[in-house]
Length: 152
Image (cartoon, rainbow, N blue to C red):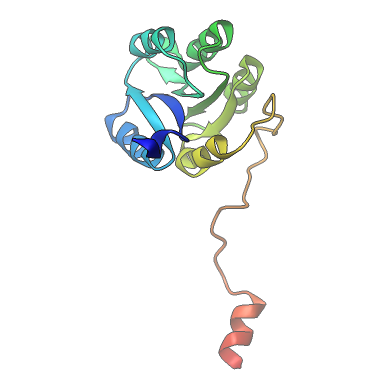
């Protein structure tokens, strides 16, 4: 159990069982994760425990994942939050940032989570939601170095 002593504690709130298991599996490598499927379960867990990071889908049926972000900010249950959604929406991203959360599109969530857990986070997400961060995406095609290696 000493293995988890240095890991952070994360609350994941995701209604889709397939994505929930994929994200939970990715989190298991770097954090202790409590996982729930709906707003009410997430609210109860936030009230019962303290977390280092809240990771919530913005779309949680009757409620919004941003309600959990506001709740965690108000109670101090989780000092940082990541809100994500299926659709790339600048409006949702701005709203998440205004609520005090970091915003990620769903397709980048698993890649981005270790970065949120590995170091000290800034006080706010200052990234522009329309500009896509392409540093970790695969760029196909040949590069000059590839051609040089084959010729040499």
